[in-house]
Image (tube, rainbow, N blue to C red; front, side):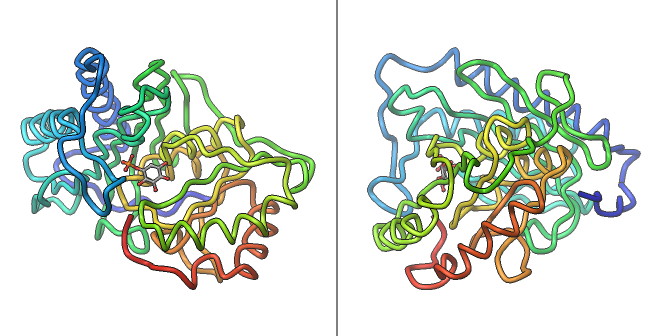
Length: 287
Ligand code: IPD
């Protein structure tokens, strides 16, 4: 995958300095979440549906991320899952998911992460340029990061996407939305995908899924309904590790569909998803 052109950066920022900050932010918030997890986690509120939870720790983690960004890069904008958008003047936006995989965090299933990315341009997948990102897996401390044109690493070691022999032997990650109508449609699409691959993994954190794709732990990934904060950091880790990250019918990755993996296999999987109308019928609201 060829990295997009690097835009001019404000305030003396470099990709390396932004990547370093993304790592410091994600690991600091991760420590807060790890050390503060009570024996029994309770739901503080719900969002798009009754099964879309927010915990006190989602809010505390995002609060910490926002305070650190305000202290270090006061002119940058913030788009976070749990709070109001903050406007900026620098042209850069921090895209934050304080706990990606909140349902896993709630139940103690070990796949939840802090996801931090910084983008230039509008903070929308169709038009942003992702400059740097970090996904910190809170339960086990694995940390993936990438900078535009710098490659991607896990715990400091360079990673590359795998090279599975065929679609039929590919292990494919995916996820499901919080809306019942959306899920019914996703289940129908799955009936078209599952017979053509090795197997499916639904691990519960899109950010970690994209990083597992980047380091070859799974072969492909697709999901409908991702929000910008679910995917921004994972997407740059995946592309810098050699993946294509795209939507269907030649469009960009985003809420309607995100498909990631080695280019030849992505082409085969998108053809199946397009034939199954995976970005069509069913509710399209966020979640
Ligand atoms: C969710 C996770 C999940 C994915 C959902 C996301 P959240 O994020 O990434 O794996 O399937 O689409 O909304 O709600 O835990 O931050």
